[in-house]
Image (cartoon, protein in one colour):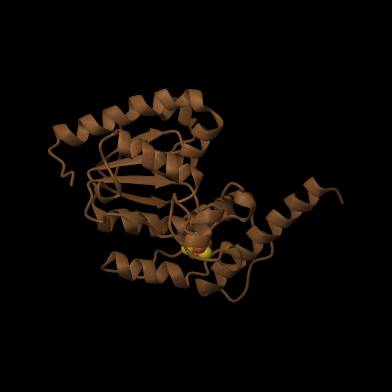
Length: 242
Ligand code: SF4
């Protein structure tokens, strides 16, 4: 079996195992042997993945994430990665998933891409105390691969709960996955970026992920244009900047 086929098979086995674990958690002790592909998609998205238990605070949610075993990433993570920054900030950045350094430290955006995000904030006249930074996925995908659909579905309720507790005024999504998941679209981030959208009544501006900027420095000027719009919106809405 060649490497590509092996990894494809491994990915499907992980997804199947995660689906079975979710079914078990949902109270199924037998599984109908034939499921149409369309059935599986709707089951995973809407029924099988339960919402996080009712939590009242971010600390309670963080505790729940630290115990989470809902997807296969729980087995390979070193630490869960919940957030950094100010939970009272009006501006929230949502990235994709932890990388090596984030998994080691248990904090988001602390590697090379995080350094670039901090420099972007500095250029905006902001710092960590003005913003809250988190990711879609709270555990590192092995070898920094893209998150799988079942992992995104399993982890999404945590982000939704996190955002509802934070009540931000403005959300900036970083990269393709965060924009497409929050806005429920498949549009490329290159088309979404720089425009305003809504998530649950909150203004959302998608932009490129800092990791992309490290590979494509020419895109920095586009992100800077986006960040000027964000700063302008924060000021015009009288948002608090510490
Ligand atoms: S990625 Fe999310 S759903 Fe998967 S184990 Fe980690 S916290 Fe749980």
